[in-house]
Length: 231
Picture 1: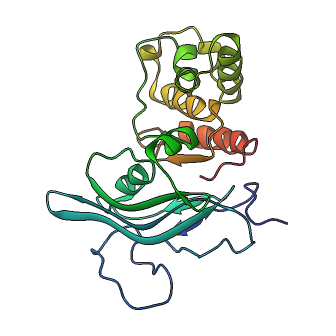
Picture 2: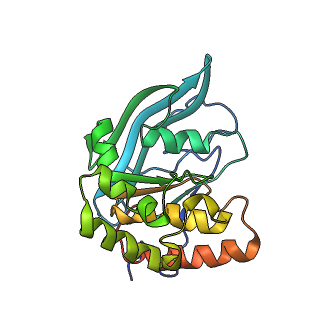
């Protein structure tokens, strides 16, 4: 069986201090998130997203330093580290969402990616969902509208993912009235609706109670089985 399939698959972990690859020691800040990267995926699959010499600094302080990282199509990668180690900064840098000083390159399919490329290929779900002052359905379809998909097609695709995440019955509700778990389900549906090549999840279950978190994880697992996105 393909070990990259999500069914029964544990994500490949990334721990602080884990060496990227054999070679001379490189000087990183203690506690930063580091990645076990390979020049090519071990199963010969295509590399979806990656980076080379990606560094982020703010106020003269280096927040993230990742010499090399490759994530294959359909692969799930977990970035592990203590609070403040730069996990969120790394994800934002990969998507060109950060406002700090960034150097190095982000790659899509082995080619240098522009911000426009990443906007089309990447969707992100953050710790705290940011929903517009509109209905749940309008929020779920927001990413599609930004990509030029409108009308009945946008509504149909958004409704499908709201249903997959168990919140289709809330489609006409004001998004500002949702509970934390409901809002996060809508944010995930919005991300999945655009069929992203890469899905970035920045601790989206933080602050949810254990039961809600377990239910949402199960629904997300099922939803991801319908995509081939790198996560």
